[in-house]
Image (cartoon, rainbow, N blue to C red; front, side):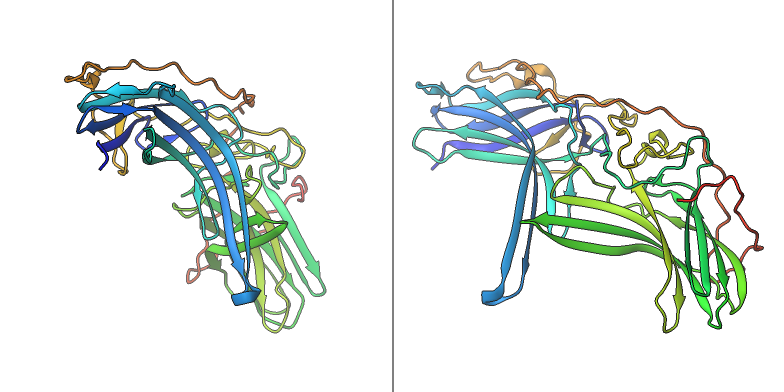
Length: 408
């Protein structure tokens, strides 16, 4: 029977959301109780960040599995260094502190999906000679402060208004649409105005949909999940008529933010405006969107009135300051999502029975990732078009377009 009892891992939360980002320091304590004097070979603590995807196609003998793995973070600290002569710890309670800093770098945020996940984990391990090690883990919620510059956000020319336009024209149906922004946060409203010219003999309905596309990649294959997060339907457009329709779509509060900087897993969003025509292919226009966590949209190029610099080949926008939170620390125990524990008094880490009380170790050396330049706050975006919902009277039809607007 192992003499190591009640092995626990605690860390000090930096904010009320219990999140960590690049450059943050993870500080905490490893605690355990020994039922007798014990020789410990080593005591280590690790911080790891891994992305994994997995799915299976087919059944039985025809099934094929797809797997991929990428590691984005690996930090390790020897709280008790491993050596030829084991360290003897006396019977009783023991507390050991640790501290290291998350390096700068283009690491993706935590994510969990149907066929993959990105998980950041703290792990403490007590090793003994000729014995199975005792381990304890605690998951970290990592929120990246950077967005990859490989996004597909289109940007207007310098000096143009902050509206993005797309058009469709085929046969007897022409449609053009504008959207007020291409960068937003959960809870934000995205305003859309569509102008439809119906020269056909068929009725049609304009529809607006916020889509989320997740792509998993492994073994040169992909698994794609494309789903609608929210939809709105406009009033029927009569044959041989021309109408302008506006609406606002609210980004769901629990939406997964856009995720680009992971080679095996990406999350994209786009706004689709399309016409529902009976017995015909539905024409549509599409606007790519970047959804970032709350508090960062106003700092992004193209968000809250600024031009979108996220187009391919444009400079990346990264390393934005985290939102302001009440000062911590909040001690978080392993196996619990709770926070708000009072900060312990340094003296409580002393081992009363044995006198063991290690000091804070030196910070782990960062990997040396370069720090990207931060973006400046841009002017406020133009006022969004009026809300239009199904079942309500549509607003007066007016053309929102002017010669000064760019086309996407």
